[in-house]
Length: 212
Image (cartoon, rainbow, N blue to C red; front, side, top):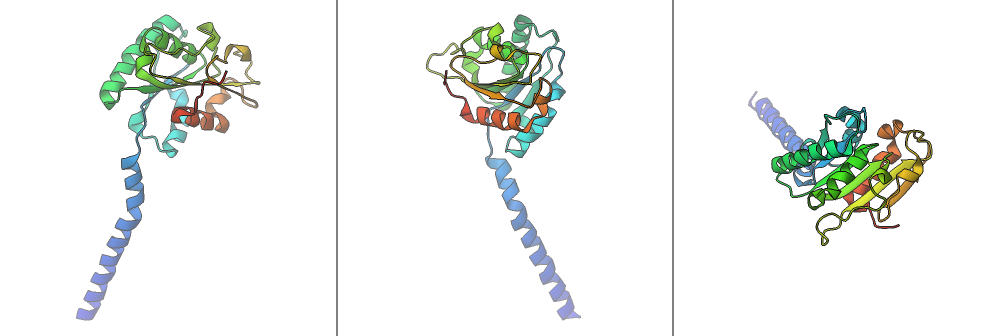
């Protein structure tokens, strides 16, 4: 009986040790991952929840819940001035909450012009990477804004699709941005497109480049 109890104790100890070893990698990954907080800006008539698929994709790529924020615009018309003001307050709240000095921005449709307006109105010193997709960026500017601090480079990526029949392709590219044309996704399905997800991840990892 004593031998049986000793054997059971040894098995239990080995099981606990094995569990601790196999669980360690996932815990260490969560502790070492760190990104700028990402703010998602929806388009006219949109909602913050429309980025659900993209957020889940980024979580699988190493982003954590407290690094992903989707703003719910009060003005659903996409008005640049109104939304840029709300965005300014939201950026400050996110920076205070996370303790970071910069945010990254992802804008769909009018979310792109909203972000550009915010940057042109003085928000550039608080932004690192900007990714827009299906966005009529030229409604605001034809050049990627440099921001208020000439020593700090904001990296831009503009994604647009040949199948987007809501926003004309020529409105999306920005001089000084990494402009990427894709096909097969329309204006709304870009929110649930694997290629767009990959490009967003690249842009948030500093993949935007001043190319043209």
